[in-house]
Length: 371
Image (cartoon, rainbow, N blue to C red; front, side, top):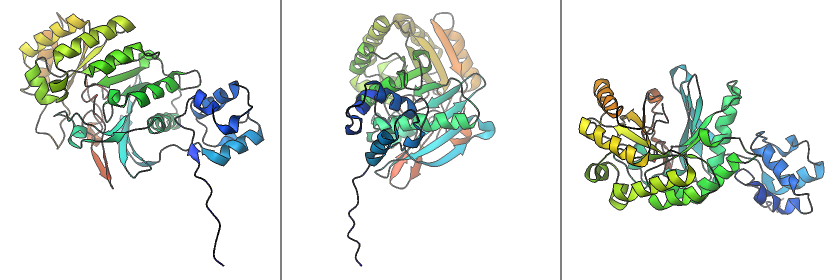
C-alpha cells in the first residue's frame, strides 16, 4: 500500500532565543510571564537537551513545546585535542552543509572558549588563514550560542564547573555580524544565561569605527580588543585591508570614545611579524598610540600557517620589542601561544570539510586568545 502520510511541520530549535522571544511562542499563550525565563534558564544555565528535563513545567506545557520545537544544538562533526589537553578544536556542521570551528583553550588559571561569528571573513588579513577563504556568511544566534553551550558541556565532562572566559576571536569579524553578536551577548549575560560577566567576555575586531561607537551605546558590557598590528597606514594596509577603508586616524577617535563612554580600557592586539612590524621604531610608535588612547597592549608572535609566507620574529627580537614598550606604554603583556600542535592557535585554523571551509582566528587573529 502506498504511504500517503504527510510529514509534519519541521520543528525549530529554541537555542538562540532570548526570554522575550520564548514568551511570544504560541505554546506559551496564557502562561505567566516568568515561565519563559524558566525555560530559558533550562536551555542556557542548566543546559537541558530535552523538554522532559524541565521538571518545574507542567507535562502539558512540555508537550506543547515539544510539538513544534527542539533543544537541538549544532552537531559536532570532529574534535581534536592538543598534547596534554591544552587546546581542543570543535568542528561544527550547519544545516546548509557548511562547517566552522571553535576552540577551547585550557590553562591552570583559566579556561577560555574562542567562539566564531562568521563562516569565513571578508577582511582578508595577510597573516590569517581564515582571511584566505573569504566570507561565506554570518552565523545566526543559534549557531553562535550552540558553540558556547557545547563547549561549556565539554568543560563539565572534564570536571570543570567554574568560570570560563569567552572571547569572540574566532573565525570572522564579530562587529560585521553585529545584531547576532549583541543578541548572543545579551542572552549569555542575562540572569538565565551562563553568567559570563564583562571581565570575562571579549569582542575582538579589525577596527570598524561606526560599530565600535554603536557598541559603546549598548546595554551590554564587554571588553574590546582592536587588532592593530601596525603603527603606520602603509604597513597596516598591507597586512589588514580594512585599513584602506578605516585608517588609523579614523579608528583612534572611536577607540577613545568607547573608552570614555564605557569606562573600559581597550586592548590593542599586536601580532609580531618578522621584518614587517617588529622594529624598535615600531615599538615606540605603538607605545605613543597606546598612551593617546589609554590602551593596553597585548603582543603575540605570529602563528605561522601554510597559507602565508609571513613568519614570527625570534624570541629575542620579540623580547626586545616588549622591553622597548615597557617604559612608555600604559600596560603591556606578551602572550605564549597555545594549540599550535593541532593548528588551533590564533590565525592557524583552516579546515576543509565537504562544501564548507572553516577556521578560527579571523578578526581576533593574533589577539592572544591562544595565550
